[in-house]
Amino acid sequence: MTKAALFDKELQNSALLFKALAHPARLSILKYLAETKVCISGDISLELPLSRTTVNQHLAILKKEGLIKGDISGTRVNYCLNTEKIRQTKTIIDTYLNDLESCDNQSC
Image 1 (cartoon, rainbow, N blue to C red):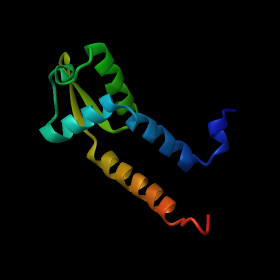
Image 2 (image 1 turned 30 degrees about the vertical axis):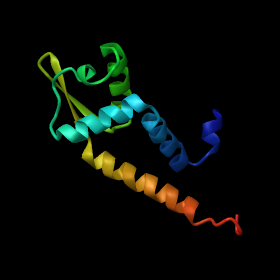
Image 3 (image 1 turned 45 degrees about the vertical axis):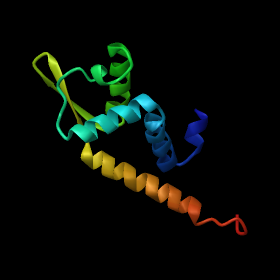
Image 4 (image 1 turned 90 degrees about the vertical axis):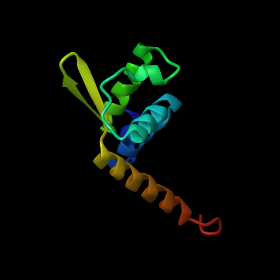
């Protein structure tokens, strides 16, 4: 049993999501996809100061957590934001931070 398993499932899932967001390259990819407002079938590594292999590793992490979708079209992969997961992520982050705010210094 891992130490993470000692915590409730909601915290475990939040931690995995936060981990996926915890790299500037992944944040940059998400921001780029949001700004383009279309699915990208080209090479996203052209937009980042990283090798194609490294960008692909970051894309895989974002896809695993469901933050992006990657549909194969011929020899290319079309990457898009998963807007439903982005909304869920916002709710998770807002709820977590609100829980922290609700605890003032005197009662905690």
